[in-house]
Length: 96
Image 1 (cartoon, rainbow, N blue to C red):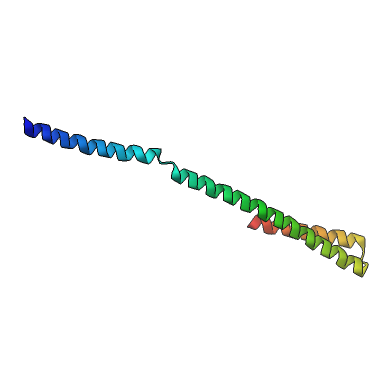
Image 2: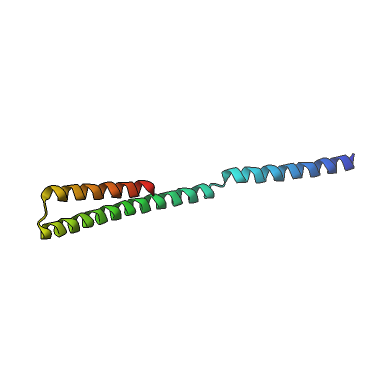
């Protein structure tokens, strides 16, 4: 009888430890917190890159306007050139 009790008691201990380990893995939310932090960091980096793209786009446009005004070229040609640049820029952004 004592032998059966000890064997059952050992099995119970093993099952309880497995159950405890399994339960702890469900309550450990640190990986989720890390993923959320990384996701927020990526969102912030995307916002910063969008801002940089906008500033560079504006700088290129201003440079082209100054370049064309110095040449005193046809205003229609200037508008078409700028339109082509925006289209090329949009295509580059979509590819990435």
